[in-house]
Amino acid sequence: MSRTLVAAALAVAFAAAPAVAQQQPAAAAAQTGSASQLVQENSSRMLGTLATRRDEFRANPAALQAFIKSEFDQIFDKVYAARLVLGRNGRNASDAEVAAFADALAGNLMHRYGNSLIEVDAGTRIRVTGESELRNGAVTRVTSQIDRRGGAPIPVDYLMRQDGGQWKVFDVIVEGVSFVQTFRSQFDAALRTKSLAQLTEELRAGAVQVDADVVD
Image 1 (tube, one colour):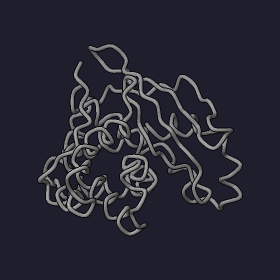
Image 2: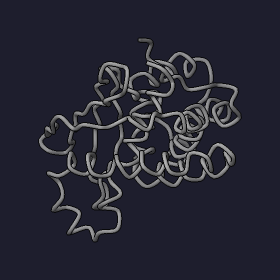
Image 3: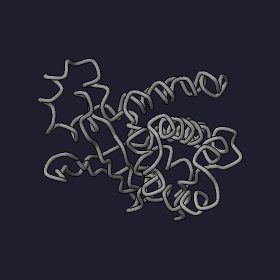
């Protein structure tokens, strides 16, 4: 998959749950079964903003990065995702070390794919195709497709969970490929020869780049 389509999948992840972000925990908890509705309704907000502010973002990359960070911090459960990425390599890591790794990973990911968001075609649409509960209801999987002009639909799934009364995305699965599993495979070898602190600093400095591209 091209970098632009990876960016489109991330765009929907950013848009998946702001509708509950302002609610009280009790009200948000009542939304447990509506993750798919939130993905469908809010994807248009994110894609619409990218379309209407495209020229501004092209002229001012800093504004684009600020917009992306704001969206990402609202919806993505980056610390939980980071623990999944680290797997056994994070068993002895402190909360502070995992949080630092999560920040570095998120920053690296946004730097690599963020600018591609403004290239997402204005005709791109998201169509939710289903929702199912996993792990006895602790996780909700929302299945969807990215409908694009001039190409076949791209299947994208979002794994979401409630955290403090808000929906949070912790994994994105594009064409059957999990971002969490992809990053775990990428970093597992590196963590056999270097510390988590070293890898975190390399991610922060850009010496190591995350790679979520899936080849067509």
